Image (cartoon, rainbow, N blue to C red; front, side, top):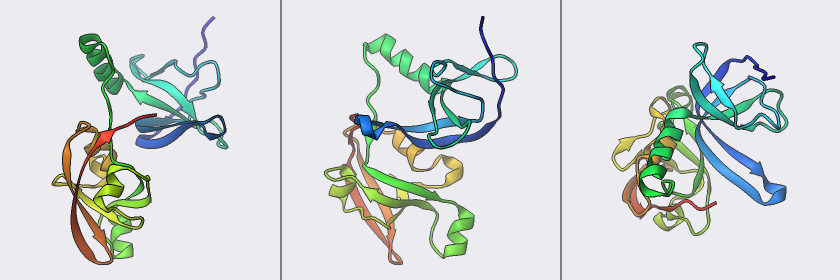
Length: 190
């Protein structure tokens, strides 16, 4: 009665926009697992298993316009949220900076004579990033003293360690200069 599909995990720590903007629902999902195992309407929400049969994630989204690319929330993130819900009665609030970005890895940084970090492609109006003075085309190189590198999870990983209301120091590279900024993270709202 149950079916199983096979696939390959093709990416870890991905960040995606999930939902349908035409229906007014879009949510940012960070640190998801990318897989080519078939995830179709009706079986999203099912477990993503490894070859030993252990649950490693929960399937939550598929890429529109792409064939057989799906995304799952890692089980360790779900366990952390469920444990907090059991002890407090609510899910943990997520910290919000308010930038859209693309990570620049070491190779791209060397090829383009720029530092590694999070290249800002958009700043959300009214966000902590805007109040800090972060601009489009800035490269965030340090977040609260931690260097941003693709191999340590990038910006999403360091933000996830914070809480709404935390005051953070941010170093950005802009036009060949390093600028120090600060802001207070807000709570992510959908």
